[in-house]
Image 1 (cartoon, helix red, strand yellow):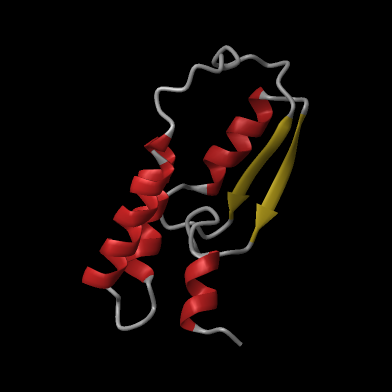
Image 2 (spheres, rainbow, N blue to C red):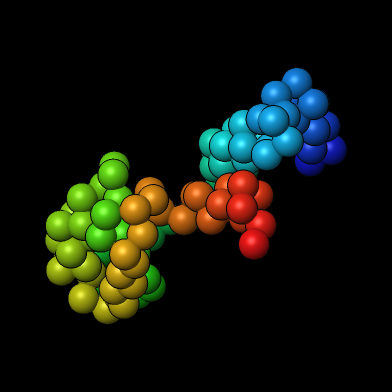
Length: 104
């Protein structure tokens, strides 16, 4: 349940404070949160449905996902918008950490 999950994260933060940055807990939260509600009973759209709309996002300098993959994904989903960033990070996962490490 949610209370147990929050207690787990709070305990993790006490054990591994990351020199006050909370980075270990932020990273753990990302991975555990991705699976928290799995399996999900909500039906998903068929894989590869070209009629899907939404946003395909990619970073030009992402160290883990080449931008060409973003472009190819967008080519296959014509109704989506392409969001491009010049970020050197992977996805949006570092935005919270950067604020903690450098709050200014």
